[in-house]
Length: 217
Image (cartoon, rainbow, N blue to C red; front, side, top):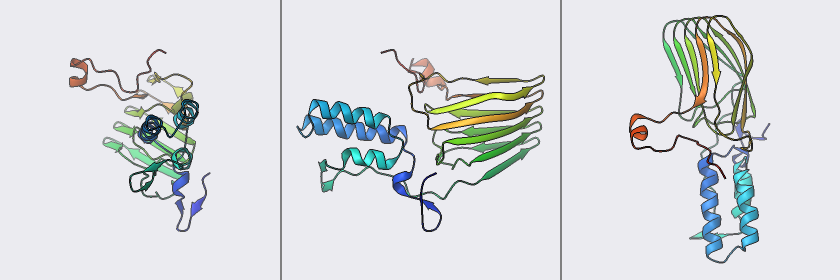
């Protein structure tokens, strides 16, 4: 668990980095190498570390000695977030509940769906701990998780009656795990699905690659 600052906030350097943050540092390193500030060997080493970095602190150390316009290059970070809640409970009977954008992932979630639906979108979520325990009770509705590379969903402990459970993760096993979602509970006549975000109609018509697709090397 990351160390916290006064007021119950997580230290900026310990916040989890996103794929966009890693890409930003990779670009800074490549530009610096092109300017002659890094050798080819140093570039390769730092690129490898950047792609597997988990926190803003790890990324910042990779560019700390590289000058930029107006001073040393800094890795932008969002404002510190409050510590994740221990438990979040969702109980929907015929409505629809969504957790989207930069919501803070708690340590545990208890989700009960009678005939409605619940969407948990992790594509931009703020992850502050490595494990989320998700306890589900789906009767005739459905729960849907939208994931991204680095998020692993384990639904082996879910009891299935007449519904179905589907987990899809198209990325390779060498992607660093940022969040492990341990799912337990039961699915009655509804369903539980965990998968990456799909292409919209325009992206499909223009043959754009699927989000988070892993290309062969």
